[in-house]
Length: 346
Figure 1 (cartoon, rainbow, N blue to C red):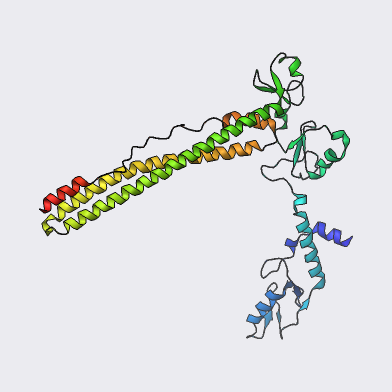
Figure 2: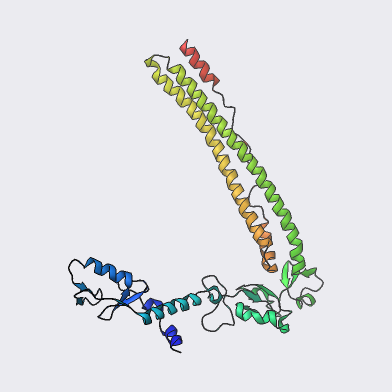
């Protein structure tokens, strides 16, 4: 009974060492009645050992000679039990809701995190309150889905029934009563059947996106090789011009700089054009990979309605189907510059 009373009224944060301000570890008590971590108080008094006068860090009462510290067994036991109690309260089995979590509708007081939602009960449940759905035959036909805060969106607003039928004629979700009223004579299927069909289409889209990624990655490699060739050829041209100009008289230094600048300008123009195309292709690849990830996540969801609602927007092509045409000249030639330099040398 005493243990239960302590765990309810106190927390471990109320038993802090006045020196280190952390929960007491191996607590000892001074003659004035204050408690500290054994290591903390000994470290404090080791510094005062030269003076021969030892003081309490909390009330400043002094002692001479250095007091003998004794372990506070009761306080040690209380702190250890409080630590264990708080660890158990923070364990996953007692996980409470946080930002973005779905609350359990059956919990009273502080809500636990819901793990499943029942479309028949129109409620969400934590692990403890979900057990009857698994154990009792009365809940055998209930439909459980991933914890969802928008349960009402899956219920027919007119008949208050689960919308488990998809009307292909109107492209909307309906309940079974709608099929004999407003949607009578329409082409209708179960949401599961529609999901199965759309799942096959989703797989085809995934294959297409993967193929497009591979094609664009190949073009990226080709473009990178083009950039390397441009840089190599440009550097070779610069090296040749430097070798020729080094043989000329000092009065030609200005002309050498002009020719070098001309080469660099051509290189910069071609490389800049290639890098713009490279950035565009890499952005398209990133967009396609993101779309593949979204499609993959969608393909594994258990929520048929969420799947069907999200499918159309995810299967829309995120960008241009065709890659930009290559306008970069990897065979950039500096033969004209070389010839002019040779003529100048002669």
